[in-house]
Image (cartoon, rainbow, N blue to C red; front, side, top):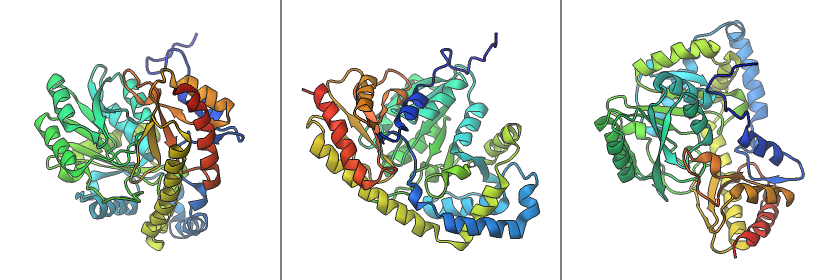
Length: 394
């Protein structure tokens, strides 16, 4: 009999995978995934970039590479975070990762011992919950409001858990709620990290996809002593299949993560790195992101209109200024998974809120994605979903 490690779920189930698999049925209008709109992938431009990469770096991209990543891509990331987020550093502060998921895993592996306290938003990104749990973290949730994580609640939590080792946050258009943390709270988070010697892992996969409101600088931009690690990715702005992310942190952390990365995959795919360098050097990535934002703005608005039209009036929902998700709360619902199963019979799907909570889940909450569904399907899908919800809300 195989003796699995404690990191493998004891019952062997994959609740989220099962939900997404069911929602992949072509008959189902699915708001469950977190996929970018594939019709906006720059296929022609990227094909040309791959050819240029082979012409210029054919041997290098087919050979083993440096664990920290292709220098030109690290330089781009360094310039990018300085220009967009006010984060300044040196090349030694940047590590290219195999998607931001690997950055999450490497930080968990580097910082979390069994029993260590890790603070997370309530709710938070479900894969982060899985990663930190796999390393034995004791997850403690910090309350949110419509402006994201409450810093008064964060300080109270730190007083109760002064030994907390890590705080994970998605400050821009948070997954799953779509909420954004305002400037003053970001400054306070950085102050609290220094006061309590807390490491913050700032995950920013959606920040550039803003279609309303004003840009807010990263938490990392207020970090003066290396307590904040910043994660970025190309998955939402260019190509998720390339699996390219990066982390910007103090040199000591980057060096430790590099050693751990070497034992995981040696280095991130060279072809994807060199091709992406060619793409960003020969194309206007900002213009491409503006096109993405315009489409998502349209789809989010259609979703808001559909919610108002078809959902029970008592339902609450977020109205994000960017990103890919909004969060719905249905009063009177005790079992969101049961609602999900009923919706599948009605050929529409969402992600129940339960997996996004580190502790006791909030009944009646679920996530909707608007980035990956054609406009003509959004209204029909919300109509179907509303028909089911009407049965549960009297």
